[in-house]
Amino acid sequence: MTTQAWSQTDLLHEMTPVVEGELNRHIGVAKEWFPHDYVPWSDGRNFDGLMEGDAWSPEDSPMSDVARSALIVNLLTEDNLPSYHHEIALIFGRDDAWGEWVHRWTAEEGRHGIAMRDYLLVKRSVDPVELERFRMTHMSQGYESAHSGELIHSLAYVSFQELATRVSHRNTGKYTNDPMAERLLARIAADENLHMIFYRNLLDAALKISPDQTMKAVLEVVKGFQMPGADIPGFQRKAVEMAVAGIYDLRSHRDEVVMPVLRFWKIFELEGLSAEGEQARTELSNFMDDLDKQAARFEDKRDTLKSRMNIE
Image (cartoon, rainbow, N blue to C red; front, top):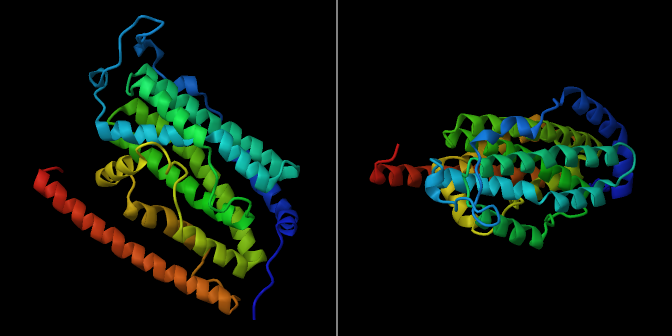
């Protein structure tokens, strides 16, 4: 027997009290912080051009090329905030607690790009001309989720995506071998974690309201998951570099992002599913097993490569 799916309007209305509670919880635990506190302004100097300073050179920063690539990916992903705001405003609306969250989330996310860009330019860690050209190309393409307009799919996606972003920021910070960069990215990652908790808890409520509908949405999102920065210029090469370095790879995606969220939702213990829901859960379980095998194969290849190159 198939459980009838809830309409978008009915779900938004039904979940409003949950959103109100989660918003109040979030505001109560979120810590105020200021981007300028994390930028060593006295280390900066003028670039060439109008300021007639020094042209950028890779030698300006001791940061490795892989760390630089990871930082560029992380920053450009944050840069597309106007498109993200547009997406969630269309889905959640701007009324009641849903709208208040949309604006609160946007304001908090806005700090991330500000702080990262200021830090990277002051420390001359990236080529400012190349970075700006990347930003223009990336933002000119905009962003549209694969599940645009679908509430439950979107809640599932951002539950995983916010956690993935947290993991990427934290691991990138450690990889930079720069204590202040690590501190900044840890601060940003803390924000991303709170955002993940907000969305994760909303999806948990959706599972209780419409378990079959939500289970199928989770399956589709997990199977087709892509980070929002996937269309950044040179993303595939940068993603491979990050994976080889262990900053973000299939293992971290499966074990540190997808599985913890699925466990929180008790996906594999959930009762009361219809035949369709059970079929979706079985398919999800099989997909996660396959992802584990893929991750193991990649780790073997990476270990072999590092051994040949005598890299620790």
